[in-house]
Amino acid sequence: MALAAAGVQHTVRAYEHADGEQDFGGEAARELGVDPARVFKTLVLDLGNGRDLGVAVVPVAGKLDLKAAATALGVKKVALADRQLAAQRTGYVPGGISPLGQRKALPTAVDESALALPTIFVSGGRRGLDVELAGADLVALTRAAVAPLAAP
Image 1 (cartoon, rainbow, N blue to C red):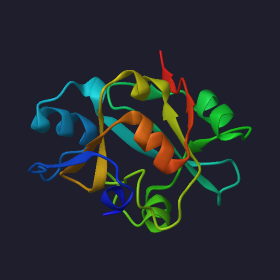
Image 2 (cartoon, rainbow, N blue to C red):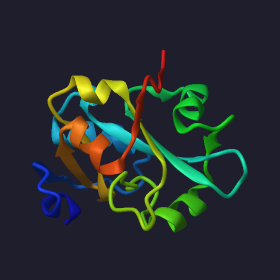
Image 3 (cartoon, rainbow, N blue to C red):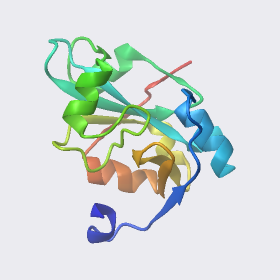
């Protein structure tokens, strides 16, 4: 795993994903028994032209501020990417898209709240698998911009 190779302290946490469950982040928080503020979702974004993609990593309990994400990623406007395109480009299934280990690393922005917590949880690349790591390590590994991305 890339995290181990990079010497990043982390813990892989698996849980039983329920078929039909669509609130993937909420399910992860419940099944892992952690505060939803510590579980982050990976949203793949269209960077305004239909072909370039980026990633926003925000707490599952919040919503993404699209304008803030655009600013953090250095573009005029963003929208949620098509799910099939997101899966194709990242190599992961929706609901299991990880900000780490994508086929080709996408420009990434991480909500600033990730740095205020001792550790956070992000998808480990499939439904029912999360990785716990320090927010600062996620930012370093993904070369992410840090910004207030969660909508009030």
